[in-house]
Image (cartoon, rainbow, N blue to C red; front, top):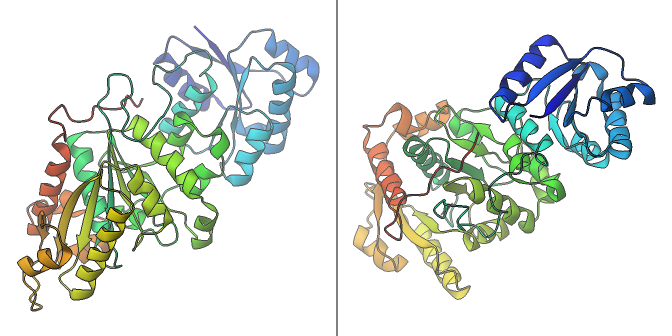
Length: 396
């Protein structure tokens, strides 16, 4: 049993922490009643031999980080968690002061639980192996399916496909699917899902050197379907500072914990998309019923072949397949140099669902578009090697 002492927080927060700790290994929480302003105060607290100390919001951010730094120097065996609004500057201060976990004052139980796991990690090591290459098994888990959705042309419906595929997989494997928005300048998966994320991939990458599975979970947003989402930055400029190496690290961490990782991308084959494809098990290739889209798709396939990216299983999706534009499906397949695996019809319900932030698979599952997208979900649920589908990643 481990003791967690809570400083400068109210009784309601203490009860939340106590409730979450009780679900672990019998850990308990206590509220620190006295002051914590001098070295003698800290020594008195340390003599209780807590595993972790939570510095609550009533201390103020500056006092909390000053105390965290003091604990780090004088009592390094005690993990410190600071309650403060997360952000790039706050995370940098957390790293500089040895703070083991950071939680927003308005954070959810999931965020608080992730912070507690991180703060108590030295005492309760996780059974997971360290993240390796995407798709590598963790413990007894089957390899993750890392599915990247691409199209050489903008406006082809990538986000509609990626979001509906994600919620469909989440319905089949609750808590085991995550969607990563890699359109770092203009990503809109949050809009398409009707969610308001507190954190984005930019926040996660800002603490890259200290990023691990537990920390990364803090930056995820949970959708009502059970899907987890790592959203694109709110501002286009924020994406410019994210490196391809950082993207690879994030994908590997996600694939070490989730059975399904779906990646939405920007148009074309930019650096981030190529990084994702290099770590993918599957790629969904999307094209429209028009000559430029088909020609660009053929060029993209030629590039992938030239780069030796033949490992990801390819799924060719023809969007707006019922459009009467003088092209035949057989002609499109011949021009693209690949068979069409799935056809998605046109529908006025598609822009309506996007504008309302309501994926079609959830609000209109019997529509022709939703049925086609459900077929794509089934293709991904079927294991590539004939074994069991990827198992749940053990999220708390």
